[in-house]
Length: 249
Image (tube, rainbow, N blue to C red; front, side, top):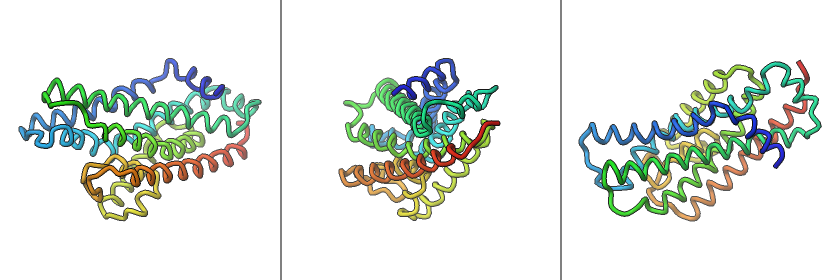
């Protein structure tokens, strides 16, 4: 807990909070604007609005946003003599790495919360949709957050190794593109074994797009959870091993 608290203190005046708020709101505004401009009604009410916002958001922007957050989380360590201070720390390597990933997971959860609130506000205020957002999309949101953890762990590792802010983000864009290609090609097994593919697939859950069947089942949620946890553990363990072998500079 101490490591996580320390990481949040480092982000107090960081641009990470702008990413957390602006990126999902841009997705909501884009989905709403496309609907208004096209003149096509939301025939499926909340379902149609959710698809128009979340599907595109999950293909590229989400992974890139997580990458930007990871670069911001590690940015302070690459400034001045902070890296040497990090390498001379009393805190264990797993605490450092897991602390970074935990903070990224929390920021990702905050991004998803902003997205959900944005969809609800737009649905009620702009399109006057009946009722409330169906609970299944809240469950899908939990799945999306879980699926983002392996990407957060991978991007955290890349940002740990690269002093550049942009380089890890470029890797995320390439990874997201690969995930989309696997999704379009319907290589489902391979898609969910690649962190970027897993997060793209998670955002399609319940939408009926690409290879999704359109339903949100307990089995599907469990599979996503297990895969996300497994990938996150493997990637985080790799980052711990790499950091253990790094030296001062």
